[in-house]
Length: 333
Image (cartoon, rainbow, N blue to C red; front, side):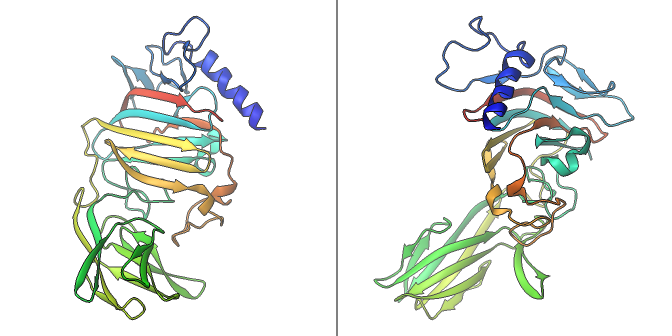
């Protein structure tokens, strides 16, 4: 099946995207050592498939026009591992998204992942711009660090997951979980922490403290100091700044950039040049649930969903514009 997918991808690059960039006359650039970015927007929008009259070419831009039925804009072919780069602009109160690895265009809601495009967010737990809709919120922490005090000596600990930091000869600290907006939820009779909606600002860390092999799990919220008997230390998670107030990183009527990289189980997203999300699909092991404890809409575990499919730009009924849309097919697709 993997070989068949590779042949589909190659055929799409050679046939469906033939009008995107100049080549050496053989359908691909002469230098095949590095994957090449292919510009998708042409005056005829010939590298896309869509129904109706809802999309039009306007001076290098694919624009959603008119009113009425919704018709998403789909890139020709199917893709597994790729990098998609684009610029987008939204009208006020508009909404769109980047649909990836869709296996059924008529049912993309249940068969694709959506990277949300929005001027703020739609009010749902994981509906912020640059988030994976219904699954994972973006990370817009600007300045944050962990302090550990042992015998009056202060150590700043990097915010790196699962990396041990020595505090003394016997004591170590390891960050095992970060929360941008710490909340709790009751699930199966237990109160568990989870990453809530990013419309608020209540970060927290879940930290492992070890001393002579004995381990203690500590939850740190904001600047509240927490004493740990196991490490004979006091831990403080300090947060100083966030990138935008009230979850507004992409205002309407301005051009913004988005980059999405899909490589096997890993999905990465950059918003306006900043990496804001890393998602490991292998962590989504249960249908209907995200690993951070929130629910999602999918009736299968995301780790079991196909890792290839269609790429689409969502028509949500209001004006949206796309330009400089470029697709790089990665080896192994």
